[in-house]
Length: 143
Image (tube, rainbow, N blue to C red):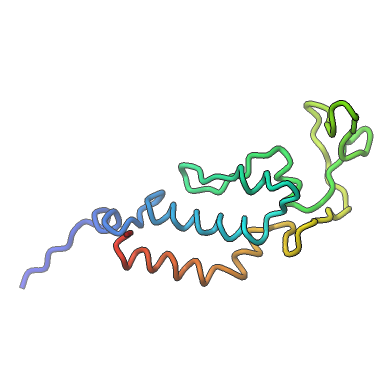
């Protein structure tokens, strides 16, 4: 008896599990959903509403302050040792072109359950659910 196998790439494509394929994108979208709904800080909601999935299935938070929120430490101007300057006419601002340095001061998050390293929190809590959701998608043939 002769057994003929389809090429691995054909099988992966049919299942949608190739790198950056539909299943990979679905996985990233589910991770983004769980992070944004439970763990990403959102005083005004800008981090959540501007996040997106890149073409390489990375979850991107494009705001200039996203890194500081993710690390969870106050970063300050190295010369003035301030996190930001304030003007009534303009609001908060920082000096252009200056790389801030981290301090040991923790940021205070206003929404319960949010905080730094939100991806790690999501992975430790929600990954089994996400794995089931992705598996169901593959079982249904991505429908």
